[in-house]
Amino acid sequence: MSSWHHTWPAPAKLNLFLHVVGRRADGYHLLQTVFRFLDFGDSLSFAPREDGRIVLGTALPGVPPDQDLCLRAARALQQAAGSKLGVDIHLVKRLPIGGGLGGGSSDAATTLLALNHLWDTRLPSAELQQIGLALGADVPIFIHGHAAFAEGVGERFVDVDLPPAWYLVLVPPVAVPTARIFGASDLRRDTPAISAAAWRPGMGGNDLEPVACRLYPQVAQHLAWLRQFGAAHMSGSGACVFAEFAGEAAALAAHAELPSGMHGFVARGHDRSPALALLSPQ
Image 1 (cartoon, rainbow, N blue to C red):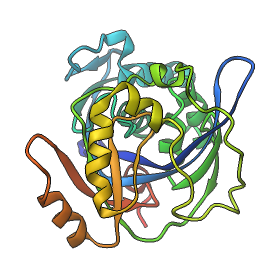
Image 2: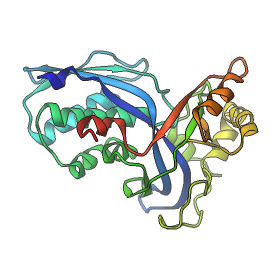
Image 3: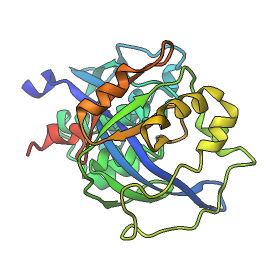
């Protein structure tokens, strides 16, 4: 029962680049990206229930219960595994909603990983990823748990080992709906595909960035400020933007220069998800 006392991390992710290389017949966009985890994110704790109920102790403002990804993930696992057990879920939210850092997807993935362990349902990672994909395109990478070059709708992975880096991540005061960005008529959808073997750190940009900057000027403003320190990109469909630094001191120095009204955080990049590390320490 001691495992129930753990606090489970739900880390942020960055898209080091994000290209739209096509579109499927069903409307889903075909992507290429590299995911990297951060040592900053949400956290979850769980308490067992014997009545089979799944209860969220900390509802998110503006998110109806039937849309909450933690609840949906727990119910999907309960059904897939035929479990009779229930759970109380407590979420500490640090990642912005609509920020492009994968907060909701990471929460769902950590819920699946944790309850698969705590309920002793023992589903393999591939099956958890399939459950997660039905919840959102970014959920599988958090279950996969390693920095990766991703393709398809973001669910096919080739692991990559990335150089050490620290990131200054800025959080514009706006939530960006993913569907609005992908639905824009001026979104580029024909960037030439590259192979995972050909990609190197620093290659590529974010095809969603021009649309987000047009629709949400706050994103463009934060990017413009951050680019005084070098290359900067938007993560995912926004709104958060980031720049990479070789060391913590340089990232913290840049953070200290933030003008009034701008907010962000400094975090270290990780190739292995802190959530997966809790299940199998190395």
